[in-house]
Image 1 (spheres, rainbow, N blue to C red):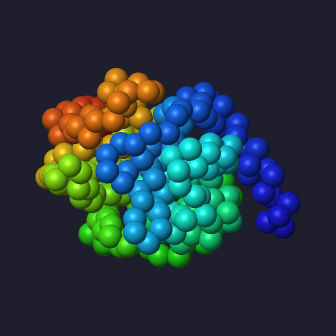
Image 2: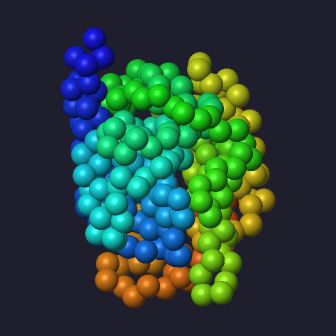
Length: 283
């Protein structure tokens, strides 16, 4: 039965991807800082993190972006087959729909927040907002490890900390780690920004009654984080295309932007507070 469903799942995910051409538009891979590389599309972030014992990929995009990710990894001089861990910031199709394909190609372990692991395993059906939207479905896959807030992911000489920042999804997660470059330590954050999707009621959803409290906690916790390098799930969220143009010389300071991160969090929090007030007033 599942085999008969897979082509339909792929088609619906592709249809959703076509809503935003920047999600599948190719973009040249490049070195961000130290052992961190961009292998995503024009807007969908995919991060390659190399280690002494194999590599990590964070976020994947749609099925049609899997070949672009593979090509980007190889253009940078690495092998996709050296990928040992696959992770994602949250379980929406635009960040996880290619996971099953990349898992099949690499045999890598899939690591996901415990709250969003169920989304990977049911192909997005249990998502509180998009569960009934066929365009957000994707090929299910088994999760090998479930993350809790504060858990460490270790591979070779790299240790990544998971930060649970729910709201956008129940298991939305940011990742922080330290990169050494030019005799300096840089605190890198791949942030899952707490944006609000159209159709979401932040005062409470039938399948997410405590969403308001989760959003509030995520804004608070993100403002407590200490970071240097600001990255995120979408290029637009950390203004990648304002900071970098293909062919620019390598600059480890390019994405150092703690002020920009704080401003982005403050902006999203204001949108949340305004929407919450309107929803409560309308009751």
